[in-house]
Length: 327
Image (tube, rainbow, N blue to C red; front, side):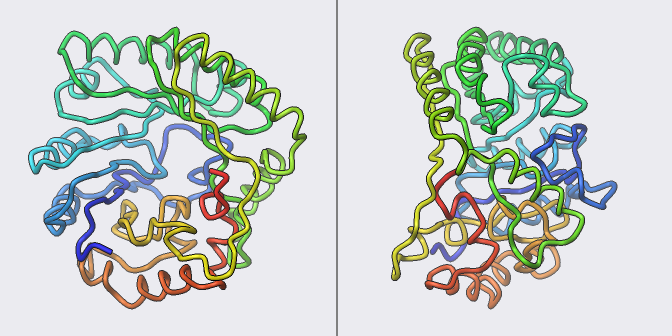
């Protein structure tokens, strides 16, 4: 473990303009959930070895009025900065900043290849706006000769499984070369789950590909692979069969995130990883109030790592797709 981490994920905004079916942000009971500019700088300034910053969390980062200032602040330190965005808020002015702020990579979340599927999953989004903004982004990046990578990401579930091959074709039509398909990140199965997130547990049970019809999954994955070969798209697909960790499996082989770097919510709360998603499920301290070093090397983090390194990991990890290697 690094004395101070080389990687950190910071959530600039804890709110979103969409209400995606698979995202617990819709159940957060917060308003005005924006990380203060001075608090962001304070966190970055406490990370002398920082080399990689993923500037996104549960909320939509382009909501933050100083998002691009955050990128530029970290880039000026020599940090590689990436972001996940739904891209629905990309104005011409924001496209200009995206092309000139020094972003290493922009990952655009797209969970359907047709308006019907995309808009059903990404509630309050519009497919035509996504396409317009994707064109706007790529044209602006090209005009500036930007080296920023753009990659499509998607969450695979039962209701979009049949469109994976079409999503590969859509990626190629946009002129992009990489599609990363992930599985639902968490089943929200811990006994301490706050009651308001119970609908997420039901949604995941209805949509998970684990224990779903193996023939249907195989057919969809094979079609996606064939489309990727046809279109020259690099395709990443998730496992759908959980891994049973043998006794004595080192914690970092189960999940290395708590050793690699913290996930910091908009209010400074440090969590083991972004799969936890929201601070009221698991908190290991607050880096704004206590300082990064005090939290990262503190008792709560060390206890969490020790339990993850044992054959009785934290309950919240047992129900996580990263822990089960099906993400």
